[in-house]
Length: 163
Image (tube, rainbow, N blue to C red; front, side):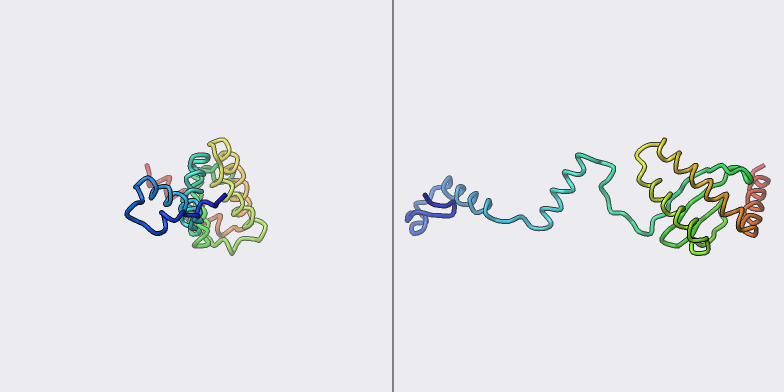
C-alpha cells in the first residue's frame, strides 16, 4: 500500500492525461500533509473562542482605564471612581492621585479589585467589586487628610454649581 503522496507513473510523467478530478485528489492529499501556519491556528482558535465566550475575545489594552461609576462612601457620599493603570492614577470624583503614592496593601487591593471588576460577567459581580472599591477609597481618604479635603471641596463645588 502506498502513502497519500505516492503517485503512479501516469501522474508523474504525462500531465496531459491527468483529469481535473485526479488533480483535485493530488491537491487534497498535499493539503492534508501541510501543517497549518501560526496565523491559521490563531484565527481558528479565536473563532472557536468567540463561539464559546463572545465576551472574552479582544486585544486587552494595558493602558486601560476602569470606570467604577458612582460609589457610595460614608463620609463623602456618592463619588465617581476610576483607576487608570497605564497612567498610574486613581481618580476620586475628579481629584487625581498616583497609585504609587498609596500604601502597598491598598494599591494592590485597588488593582486587584479593578481587574476583578473588568473580568465580571454580570452586574451583580460588578456590584460586589464596587462595594469593595468603596471600602478601599474610604480607607485611602481616611489615611490621607489632604486628599480627603480636596475631594470634599470638589464634591461641594460640583454640588453647588449644579444648582
